[in-house]
Picture 1 (cartoon, helix red, strand yellow):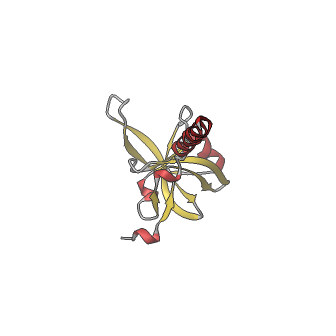
Picture 2 (picture 1 turned 90 degrees about the vertical axis):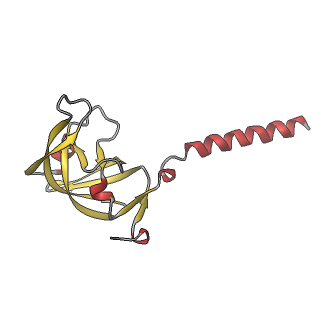
Length: 142
């Protein structure tokens, strides 16, 4: 078991590299502590040269009649914040999704600590803007 001190702190969305036989592909990924496995879009897998398929896995799916879907699994590497992790990646058509890579607990567990405040700073900007408006109003009322 690794301690918190040995883990890198990352945000909810980070740029990752998917590394395969043909090279590497850099994309923003969603770091999902609720996902057991890491998923990569088919197009990214093809560009990076991931493969061959070494297994298939069942993934829970609310939209499937069976309650799960089967996905192909390939070996590859993910690099996040300078740390490379060899991992089994399941392949999925993520074309309609915002993030083409979903990093699951198989990568995060022993290596990273996800801090959502590191990614979502927009609330601070809104608060700062409101503070400025209030300060300007108070000054103009004097």
